[in-house]
Length: 431
Image (cartoon, rainbow, N blue to C red):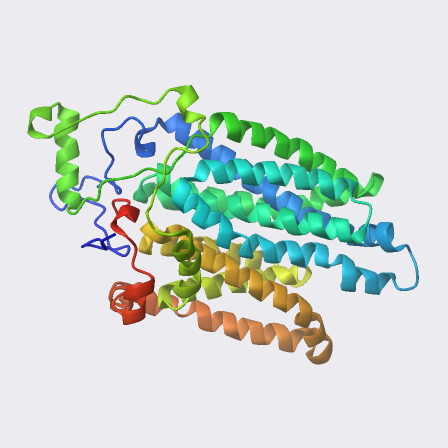
């Protein structure tokens, strides 16, 4: 496949120079099946469903962490080695899950990119529901760990596919607000999951956490199967955005004689229930899976990934993290995600996976060494060092703000970037 002649890399015009009219990016088609043309009510319903799904994903992934002592007693007994059983064995229920949330997307996102997001949503939520039951009934450490590993793999898909879904159905000028709602749901799932799980275990077995999760995930899974249509859409590339605005204005005014318009029929409810609709790119699965690994060499993606790793680092010692710091790191992560999605929109899935995978690896490795580091050096030294590293990462916002355009376009012309990262023309989405 040939490469597209024009790649904006996030540099787009959002208002008409003469009329100050908002330029719709991407330029919507006349197709009623175009997700950008769906009703506002349907778009907000999908936003709500995605947000509730993300809340529950983090609820079941993080919530049981408050019951590690009870879980360890269930599998190893309340002996003198209980503390070692918690830190050396039961803690793997959380660290392995966190690792697979990131690494699993090396499979899920290429699948969603090539065959659509709907089959990935359905498969991942079905798998989440099944694994939640498995976690609740497991009778051995090995069985519980296997369930948590697969559960983590399933959790990763909605977390990464959700921002891509929002980018499919909302215009560029709306995307920031929608991403805030998404990240708030994600963060609330973590916080509420811990609190609610703690309340559950005060009077019930830790297994009750999974029974509640199973019921809620089951409802969301049913809604996804029957009410969540495919949001991927094969869009014709638009070279001149201003020209696209003028074309849309003519169409709205009824001057269709000046524009060659072929409007396909709207798909029926039954047609929207199809799990697989079409193939959305000719790029191979291998190329789609390897692109996130190569993308870390792009300065923009590297910086956004380091911000996410900082977020993971703060959460790894949540008891010592104040509310203000947690709020700023969550929002910094949100900004970083929106920034790289806007910068590399056609391959947004791959660059978000880059963030997710390296964040998961960083958090997994940190879980092995941070306690020992704190014991040897003390909280003040450890968090002072981390604060310095965080400041160095965040201060880079200034060169990226003022020189981001030049940097993105200059690095996009590097030889190995041209060969390994440039996308095929069928990945173009009109921005």
